[in-house]
Each structure stands twice: as C-alpha cells, then as structure tokens.
Image (cartoon, rainbow over the protein chains, first blue to last red):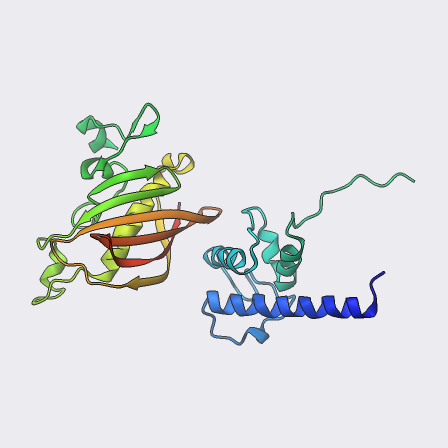
Amino acid sequence: MPTYQQTLDRATERLGRCRKVKAMIVERLDLPIDPDWITNDQPLIGRGLELDSVDTLELMIGIEADFGVALTDDEVSAFGSVSRLIDRIESDGPLDPPILPPAES
Amino acid sequence: MTDLVEAGAPLRRDGRWDVPIEADRIRGVLPHRWPFLYLDRITELQPGRSGVGIKNVTVSEPHFAGHFPHSSIMPGVLLIESMAQLAGVVMASAEEVAATGKTYLAAVHRMSFRVPARPGDQLILSAVAGTRRGHLVDFQVAARVSGRPIADGRLVVAA
C-alpha cells in the first residue's frame, strides 16, 4: 500500500500533467480562454469545449510532441475529458482494458 | 480520368505510381483546371506518405495582373494551394482514397512565408504525411527555390 507521501506525490504529479495538458490544448488550438477554465472532467468533443475532428487531430500531434505518447485512430474515447487523456498518457497502453473472463471462484 | 485514358498515359503501371507525373496526368488525379491548377509535375511519390513536385511560376498567370501591378509576387494563398494540391495527390494515390480521389483542404497551421516567389522561380514543393485521424491527415509541407526556403508549415487534408 502506498504511503501518504507517495499518494501525495502522485496526486501532485497528476495535477501538473493536467495543467500541462490544458495549457497545450489552449496553445495548440489558440483558444481565447484561460487554461484553468477547463475542468478535468469537462467533455472536450461536442458539448463542452466543442472540439471538432480537426481539433482532435491537432491534439493528437500535441500529445505526441509534448508527452511522447502516440494515440491511435481508434482511441477517440481518450478525448472524453482531460482526466481521460491523462489516464491514457499515464498508462501509455490501450486506453480500455481488455474484457477479462470472470475470475474462477 | 477521361483525359488520362485519351492521352494513353496510365497513372499506374504494373500497379505502381509511375513518376514523373506530368501536368496532363496530374489532371487525371486532381479535379483542378486552368487557371487553378498549381502543380506542373510530380517527381517523387510514395503513395499516401510523401511527394515532391514542381510549380513553375510564370508572369502569364492571371493573378499577377493585380498582385501587384508594379511588383509581381505570387500570393501566399496560392503557395498554400500549390502545396495543398501536392498533398492532395499524395492522399489520392493512397489505396484507400484512390477509388474516389477526392480530397479537401481542412486546415492550415503555422504557415510561414519567408521569401516572395516571383515569375521565373521554380518552386520545389514537398509534402510529407504525418499523424492521421480517420479521414484527416496532417502534412508537413514546404516550398523551396534553388534550395532556399520560400514557405513552410502544416496542412490538414481530408479524404
């Protein structure tokens, strides 16, 4: 079990990543808003930030450039929110875990 | 494709895109026609991935009548158009797009115009495909004259 300090360090690190992603979104898309106005769970596509397909392509390029994580075409769900993007960046693996058979009891 | 068949110059030979592709054959790929075809020849082509093309700038082009009357400079938007047409051919040559061949310019990012292009210049255009998302492809594009950068930036092309 992680210690309190380890949990605090991880939360601080994630907060920093959130800020970096929000700043990247605003800078890449030239949005006329303060990055802090974007909340962690606010939808990015459609209602919410109202990003379109060209915007998400630009964010894919930004994530690869700034975080070294290449998103694939079928990972649209990663753009659900800033939190989802961070989850994907931190995992650097498939966003959705494979469906496993129920554990044998 | 009608022009192409009549000219007897197939775009692909033995299933491969045969370069150089001259203006007559480019009209078999792109729907553009005079005075809006800004690509004279394609010298290198990796279908769906990259291409190098030539655009010869000539004072006979109609936009020089007004841009500008006493100083002929190729408009920056037409430099973008030249590079976009090359990117369009790169896209249209990809197997999954070749069936329809229709491509559209979707976005222009961070385009810089470094030196004016003037009549007599031979633009060497390049387009390299990068990140893709669905029907959208990001291209790094550039135009050079005698090795000197004229314009560069990124274009998003939609198929």
